Amino acid sequence: MKGSEATPAEAGARRRSAFFLLVAVNGLNAADAILTDLSIRWGLATELNPVASALGTWGKLALVAAASYLLYRIRPQALWWPLVALAAVVGYIVVGLFLTQG
Image 1 (cartoon, rainbow, N blue to C red):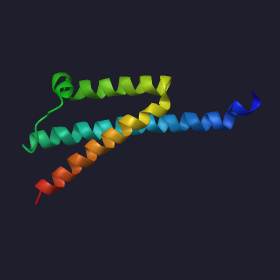
Image 2: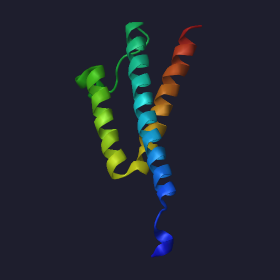
Image 3: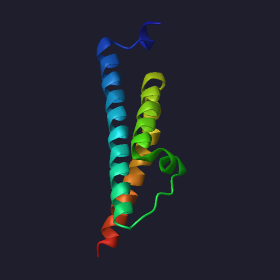
């Protein structure tokens, strides 16, 4: 059907949008890892994520990078879910750090 096919411009826009989601997910994951490590070093938090505890910071970064890349290749719009979850986690950590600095 002629109306259901995307134009090259639309396909390019979708690829750029999906790539932005991939980069954003991994950026937020890195922010989560850095802020969590700092919070633990400063004695303000403990790592409650058993996967992150078992794998360590670099392992967690690699696991999320691999999983998000698979989503990017298979179902790119599904990257919105980890994006929202990681944004909430980073927001929670930032608020917690501000509240404990008083």
